[in-house]
Image (cartoon, rainbow, N blue to C red; front, side, top):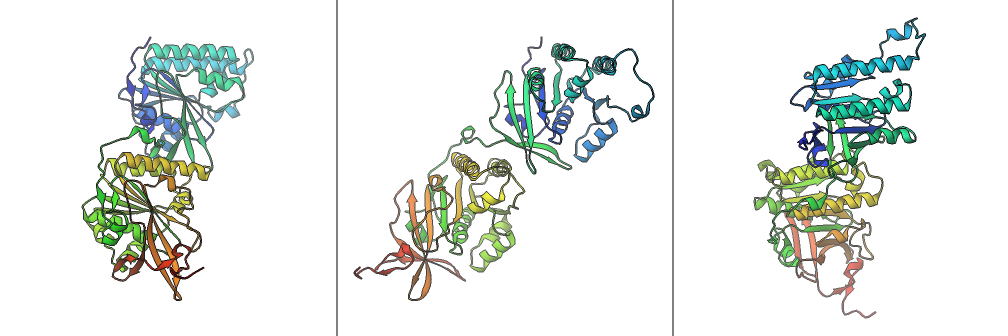
Length: 484
């Protein structure tokens, strides 16, 4: 019996991370999912990752179709042997019939012999049976199927052949019987525009919990985007204070924001939230820190044009490559894909500051989750990961109230924030003005006052403390000495 417990590559990007290192050599895996979920693609990519001979045994598609479809997905099957056991078209028009034995008994025994002969001849390191449930239907009864398949799997283990078998959901005990045969079970599900993959069984190993995004793209094949687990990541970080580039704003923040902190910039529409967040990107870029801003609610060209018009120097930093601005198209990514994108930026490209603009767009723009609560958990995991990696985060959030009671956030994310900067409209002497203040700062003291905030052609101006007025946060201030 095989005692080799080494890991072998799955051939599908991202899946090895879910499997904590890949498949276990010599084991048998079951890939279960409905039609169109991508079971065969995952199995074919497993075969192409073999160093030695690999064998595909198929019951549904002709060999020419399999190779052509794989090529369109960017999967090279030139080194894979295919045993085509699909039914030929001539069978439908044949007048021959079985007269002594039932058709399934004759065909089933013949197919088993052909499978055994192919395995003996090829001596594959990796084997795929696609689908195993088709072979079940060609054997006369449950006992014969279980007896023959158990014998096959035991023999493959003796030969140290790593095997994947695809199956489709079945009713009752039949489905459980198929899963029982494997050391590993992978469940794939598909909705209208989203596929997920989950490891429900892995004998002798742990795996990443949860349902992970599973994507298939023409020319690129399939890949898995593992669900982000913040606790799996950690690196040393400092608590240095980072300037916003404007002295008065730094004064409000007690010197700046701390490296590795999460800052929420909130305010009503048009108050200057993105502009305020961009100050931190510009300041980081000027310090030489790689930074990235993800735009969920605005075109990149509009953002850069608008920033230039108010003298925020983001575009020159983009041209220099120290700041990157990325426009996220709505409904093109799942939260897992977006988290993977950020992980790549942080772990491979050295990004130190991340701005997400804005949180409402994040919720509307990312697909694949069923509820607002799910997306809040995804955002929580993302921010926890970035904090553990020492990355400074700026979250831009719009609140509905223009005046009236102060609301720090509408999206219930204030608990994520180490710092909350808020913008507020106020009306005085028939004019609309803006104020900026700090509502929360977890790692130090801050200025308990409000300052006027103004966006001009020459940049952002933060004025002196507003004094002599009360009721500023209601939006309709009055002189402080005026009696009720």
